[in-house]
Amino acid sequence: PHTKIYKESLLKEIANLRRDNSRLQTLNQEAYSAASDLQERHQGLQDSHFWQKIILDTIGRNGHDREIIQKLRGGDTAESIAAWLRDQHPIQPHIQRLPDGGHGLLEIVEGFEESLRRDDGSRRGKESDTPQVRWTSVSSSQTLLGHLFDLYFTWVQPVHMLFSENDFRESYETNDETYCSSALVNAICAMACHLMDPRDTDGEEDIEKLTNGFMNQARHEVKPQNYMSLCSVQALAVMYLADLSSGKARSATGYLRASVEFLKAAELDGQSPRAREISLWGIQTLNTYELWS
Image (cartoon, rainbow, N blue to C red; front, side):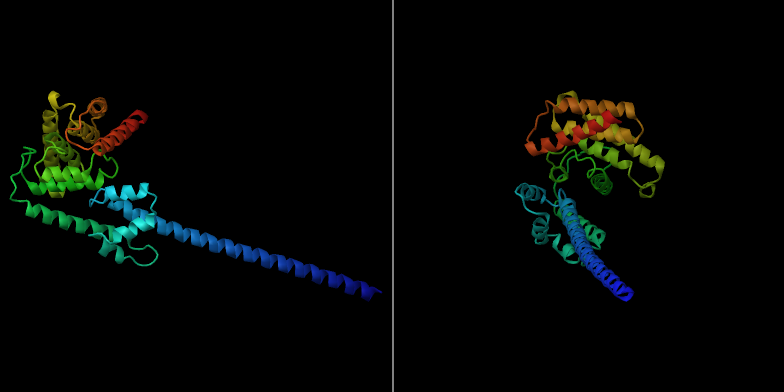
């Protein structure tokens, strides 16, 4: 009898172990499926991040910003837009060099920007015979001004977009005052001086002299008869950033308040409604930062 009881108990234990083993196998399979699903989602997020990064790095840099925004509003996916960009010059060669898994993005972006700079230099060379407007009297060096523009649009523009870089550069290079003004040019240069490396000039004293020179001319060029010009409004907003970078918070706040007030009644002067919208969002964002700081 004892043997029979022991046998029945052993069979029950074996049956329980089998059930437990089956349950563990089921849980293990579920865990494996969940891990696979998470891995697929992670890869999808990586891919999505890569395509979005390509799109964001392209907007406002090579003339495709309007097409990209239209496609986004039309419901196109980031991958389809990036595929479209792959066929556009000059981004195609850099996207094709991307290794699997999204590695090497920095190299792609740097190569893309270098390609843009070469194209920009080629375009400037073709337009070198065009008489240049005297946008600033602080310096006549196109190399210095070009360097300051590059500093501004590399480090400031992505954070505080107050106007379109493409529109500004086109007006500047074609001597057109629709999207460019002396006040705006000098304000941009004053702000960019804070980003200069002393090795690019004769030292810190030279940078300070350049900063003050550009800022003084920017102030001089913002005249009462031009207060309602959108370029003047943009210049005042950039002057706010320049004075803030110089530690002059009180005068900087005055420039921002003037920019906000004049923007309400600013005249387009040939600029597009889109240009006004860019300035509106950029200046309102600056004003929000100022109110919260």
